[in-house]
Image (cartoon, rainbow, N blue to C red; front, side, top):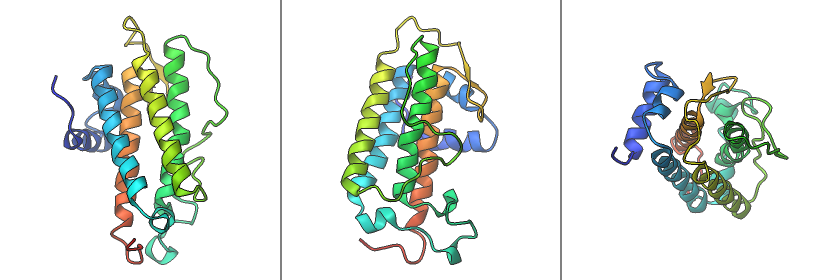
Length: 195
């Protein structure tokens, strides 16, 4: 199968959002290698954003007048909050993917609900380093999945149904795309810092 482009991924995300396709169905259409490369691409997009934006841009939050959401709501998150949430959420994927291949790893930071672990106080350099480390970790874990792993075995994700290894990777990709779109919308709001 041909390499997934960013446009392919956003089209898949749209089909999932419209209910035409589940995350598991989307993931099952691709190999783990193809999904890992797609995840590498979504993470590279976020990494470039973190490294390219100023500290003011990364921590800027829409004022209440521009959003009807409460201050702690995802609709009012800064880019830093979205990225710290993505980093923490990765442990949830790793836990479930690990269980599917017989690992019993525990994580110090584990999200307990939607939107958990968003933190606007992380300095830019630390944010970039933590995102890079998280990306390398998940890609290494995907690469270490044994060739004879059962790709049909599934674990309940609570929110997105039962997911296989490929479904968990697709979930990470879609989650990246969701928050990349959210971050991109910040630039369209009045008051967003120029640099």
